[in-house]
Image 1 (cartoon, rainbow, N blue to C red):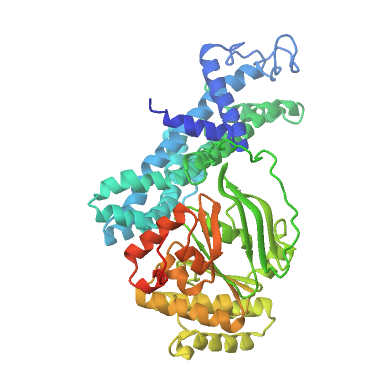
Image 2: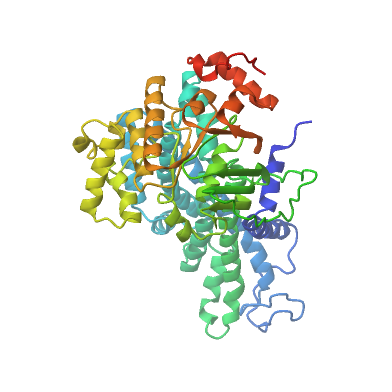
Amino acid sequence: MKAWPGGTVLRALTRDRNGLIGGTLVAILVGAVLLSLLWTPYDPTKVDPNAPWLLPFTDGHLLGTDMLGRDQFSLILVGSRETLLIALASAGIAAALGVPLALAAALGPRRFAAGVVQLIDVAIAFPALLTAMILAAVFGGSVWTAAGAIGVAFGVHLARIARAEIERVSGTDYLLAATASGSSTWRNIRRHILPNIAPTLLVQLSLVMAVASLTEAALSYLGYGSPAPAVSWGRILHDQQPYISARPLLVVWPGLAVALSVLGFNMLGDALRDATDPRLRNRAPEPAKPGREVSTPRQPNPAPVDGALLQLTDLTIRIAGRTVVDGVDLTLTPGERLGLIGESGSGKSLTALAVLGLLPEGAQVTGSIRLDSVELLGRSERELARVRGNRVAMVFQEPLTALDPTMRIGRQIAEPLRLHRGMTRRQADAAALELVERVGLPDPAELVRAWPHQLSGGQRQRVGIAIALACRPALLIADEPTTALDVTVQREILALLDELAREQGTALLFITHDLAVVSQVSERIAVLRGGQVLEDGPLDRILHHAEVDYTRTLLAAARATAFDAEAFATPPMEAAP
């Protein structure tokens, strides 16, 4: 039986503090509206100027009465109708206007889209409250006049934000892949664009509802709201204005109702964004594995290994309740080259990111990470910043996204030198020029003034290597640095990494799923699967005498696809296992 999709969102909301508080406040508002339609303790429109003013909890009046003898609790209940109605109507009008405008501005023909953008810019210049006051003066105050003015005013704001989100999604690879597979524009909008911008729209619409509640109260207080005998929280404040100095308690209840409804809309909108976005939604914790403590994980205090540069002990990483790295033990000595291999999702990159303290927000890390016998887990961001780029550096997989598109190449290479070596700008620029030459890039004087988009993939990766090795780190982490490159450039980058690392005496942690690649730069191999180290040993033993079936399967696949058969040749007089 297929699960109800809303159940996942509801469970996510109940685990979110903002969702619980915001949902409770909005539920109270909706409950007040429903209750007012069925029952009120007293007639909220019945006026008796001769009746005495009653304090709360007096003669059956829960919140007391006002100076006109009206029951305050009944007024608050009935006033909730107009608040909820105008909030929903304003959000609906804003969405109905803003989303089509955004789609037209982002996906329409160039001239038409430019005209829509100019229209949006002009409409934004008109304040919502002023527009609502003008419309109320012309057409008379009503819920629909206020909702229309607020919805139109915030609809154009929504259109501007949604347009930016649509353009962001339109440039993603998955949308290009969908288009390439024959998906039409309208199908792309329905299946890819709108679901991906929905979290942002939810937040903006919750803001529209909150502002609509405030605007309605302001209009009614100023006398531009619905005329009597309509009841709203803003009109209650308007009616009590002459008596505020004598009875300040009269404005507490309607003011508190407005404030809580606005708070509820805002908090629920933020929680809905997280609950509806699979990338932000917390997943249910996985059950504990037998023999491993999960609720109170062990924090080991291992003795440092003599001569170890990097020592990982029982490293465990949990993200959104799921264990992605499970008890990894690794040791790397100065100048050593360790290849970390495994299939996608085996935890290779997360292990490397944990060393630098760059795991995604919310990740739970236990175990031990020692660099030069100093524990890194639990260190502050300032302490880790002194290690990154200085003692430990990293070369990332995608060279284009790893470089800042707004900075010239020379400035990016010089940045770690100024941060960690205290060089002046002139000294760092000169050192950057030398580094560009060392990594084999042509015409260094011109290249340092280039932008990242002006370089090829291989050139960008050489720049990434120059940045990583600028401060001569003791440990270099290379996270699949040749995956996005062609075979010829791949060999050049591997040779460059090996040469520079040996020249500087830098230890290398090379992450890849390609055994043919790792065999060219590594002395030792560790095999990961499911977040666990299955096998760890010298390169020759792993390649020719692997002990684990999974490693032998990887070797067989590598031999079947390798262009360089010598890398996996079986030693003479020995049969492959």
